[in-house]
Image (tube, rainbow over all chains, first blue to last red; front, side, top):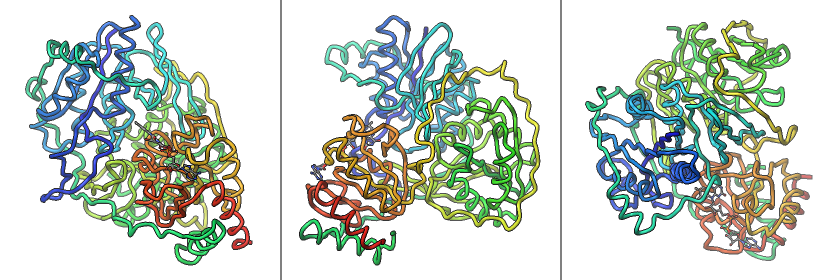
Length: 256
Length: 326
Ligand SMILES: Cc1cc2nc3c(=O)[nH]c(=O)nc-3n(C[C@H](O)[C@H](O)[C@H](O)COP(=O)(O)OP(=O)(O)OC[C@H]3O[C@@H](n4cnc5c(N)ncnc54)[C@H](O)[C@@H]3O)c2cc1C
């Protein structure tokens, strides 16, 4: 069985977000990581291979040259092969465009299970993987914390609003991973060294035989969350503080 | 192409979810700018009762796909049903709640239609011409404004970010729509659905949430939160750490891997306010933090705070609110 994992490089979740002179997100000095939810997907894939359920794990990334760090990290975690599709020709990396590019790349690849994180911590959109599944006609099971691979099918349960759903999908299928499914390993030094010898292919859009997709949506502005004045702190005994708080909720904030 | 705007009307436990009323309100502002009507899409099986409810939530027309194969939700069948109904009704922008169903099928529908999608919208910045929507990014630390480039697109909105539409004076016209669905071709089977909390306020739709973290110390701590939640008519939330420590069921978790909530009032008791927790609640209108550590990050996004032991402050607050709200 062959597995493909979609991986995006993001800023670390803890990053302090600021705007640059052109109004974009300033990312120059911020640590970049593999999107944590994609890391769960990579770990799951590597574990499936270690258990002998799968033979081969390929990680596919759309990103700039610096995203090679993300590919390397996944190889050091145990993936067998990495593909980076260079995004410099893509005008705007909206979810539609990235999915079209990934769809074109995956059409030429053989696989049984496609894995990805349920969300990227930067854009919070949860769109790309599902769009890729649609392009390739794959069934999907989203936001899962347990996967069971069977003969030609995958079973997983997903937490939905007010209910848990247990679903079985025919392979090839897409499964997106949530936190709790596993604990991603830290790459060890020997594995980091080994990763350097693993195949890492860079592809351009012309290698994939496609033109840059026309974006369907465009980001026109960024704003920071307005800084709060600092919380108004109520002091005194618990009863005194609670009385002032109750009063403020009623008459100042008017929320009760 | 019509000027009409479409709304996916989500139901749960045989009732229209409150978020659907908010989605209708958003669709109404877009429809007014386009000079079109608001068309509701109701999908499921055995929908006689629900149709009459849905016809009265402020839509101009209600298209209903009632099919035995839609008795249990699945992304596969619902995508086909929504796309079929949308196309038969003339097509146009489609609005969802950013619920687990909206997240599951929104992108799939958008791509089947070759369209863009804006997820988790919290504000409309421009309704006419090329609409612009604001949405949180980087766990709520920033927002971006997204402009759609084409006349048809998909949008999902965060619950409690917009007011509900006004109910209709008289029910809208109900149009049955036939969509071809053959379960034999389905690639996904729903093995089991474990329902929870029927009858309780869904966390994502609650106006007030009382939430507990490691600082409430145990399941008893959540028992202590219940009377407070009761006086306020609130739902109970939790941090992931509290869920992992088995203080409370995972369905209460708020955050990046839990529920995204945006209530009028969020009271965080013994929660440090990690980024991943904030991702799920930072757009709440009023945030209260009760924490022994004055430097806990939750105070940075709180409007009001009490530095103190939750075990003392929570019962005191419950008492005060009982008096005030009596
Ligand atoms: C990929 C990923 C996803 C995650 N997703 C989520 C998510 O969805 N939701 C989520 O919540 N977390 C999530 N987390 C975990 C998150 O990082 C934090 O670990 C978690 O939110 C901490 O929970 P807490 O605030 O209850 O516990 P702690 O961080 O241990 O904080 C406890 C707080 O209680 C205070 N306290 C202690 N005693 C008292 C007392 N007697 N009275 C009052 N206050 C007291 C302390 O000062 C402290 O601030 C995620 C983490 C990762 C890596």
